[in-house]
Image 1: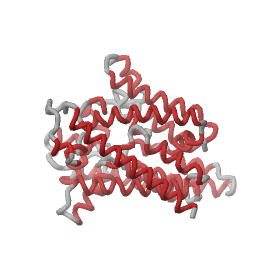
Image 2: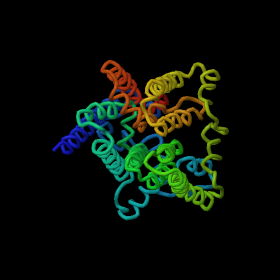
Image 3: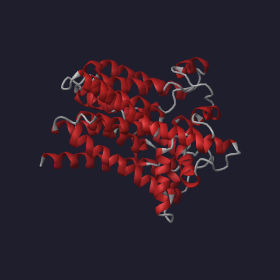
Image 4: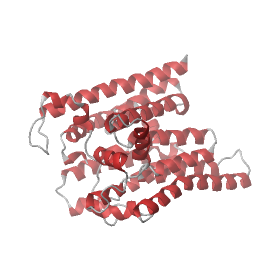
Length: 369
């Protein structure tokens, strides 16, 4: 009965938050000027979900899912697609190949929503220690500023599922399987590289196993993680001519030499970029939260969160930080267990930022990125 109640709580938060997000999207495009067209959308366009949400990176995922990575390879636009990691768009491409009459937007949207719901179900059933915490955890997750990305053609829903799956398998001491799932996450977005820390350190520090067993299983976990990554690099080499095409193509996105904390330097180089300061403040908030909670978390989960925060700074500006915080499940759990005033403060800040970024997203305002 308790398990069913937890599932219903997670489902309720998911459905309610999605309805609010859809409503805000409609209001946004019907009220504010679109930065690409210079006009306010018509009522018909406002209620056309594809017209509202199939924007920004979703258009690139559609390009890859529809045509693959070699489409228009002799053009700058065609080559720039290599900067996007393959698991999400190629999975959608596979589904479309089985049902070619369906549209990319709806297939990708349904896939993202199903992945998100599966992740929330696992969190409610496997990750949360006490049933009375489920509501608080879901509140923190579903009010996160970037949670609207979980339900549109973006990688966030799939990535969240892979993060939760890694945590669940690690808790079950199925370290090798957790390493494999973490490897899949690393082929979904670059932040997935940090996920391997969760099963590796849990295995290495597992006091229930003998030292020799721990070392052997840690090696196997790393090997399992390396399998999807190696397949990804081999695929890039075969299709794009270089196993590191995704890195080389960053030059086409104004990021020719990614390095940690480049975004911090960006605040000095581009001090008038309002978006940099807004996103940078979000990054500082989550760094502060990690510092607040790190003693309460397993070392692998701390390193995962720290790794995501570090990788998020390798762009010229603090772009999209609010998106990258959504799958930081260890921080989400810690925030949910914190004092009411801290939890409510984090939720309030996320709601304000989330509405701002959602409206920017649907009106093609660069503030969103």
